[in-house]
Amino acid sequence: MPSGLGAAWSPAVDLYETPDSYILYVDLPGIPRDRIEIRVQQRSVLIRGVRGDPERGRAADRLEIRTGRFEREVDLPGRIDASGASAVMRDGVLRIVLPRESSESVSIDIEGEEQGPEIVEAGNAP
Image 1 (cartoon, rainbow, N blue to C red):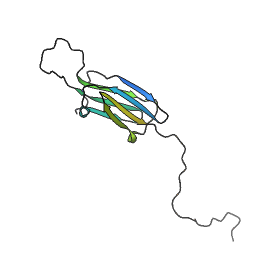
Image 2: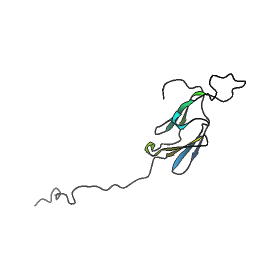
Image 3: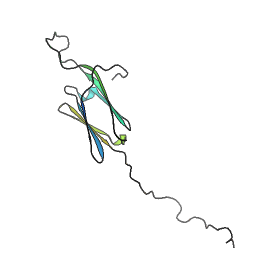
Image 4: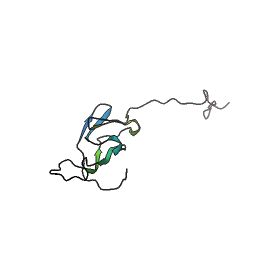
């Protein structure tokens, strides 16, 4: 999908927070998932793509459904773990789950020698 071209419209979004993730819903009826691109960064999500004209080449009496390129960037309230992001398209609504970045303190085991060299304190030398 070509990038860098101007967007004609922006889809509606809803953003929800849970204790461990952000959930983003994007209203994209009539757009196949292979026409949608999602880019996830630590504090934002970019959704872009193209909606084609279902009756291309025919004269229309009324046109209210937006077609052409779309783009929507959503800033998130906190940092996320982009590698754990997932997306599902169902009934024209794209659902993106973005796990929050862990802010917990974690203990780390030290690998290597079991016993180090003997340390002699100053003034206690043999």
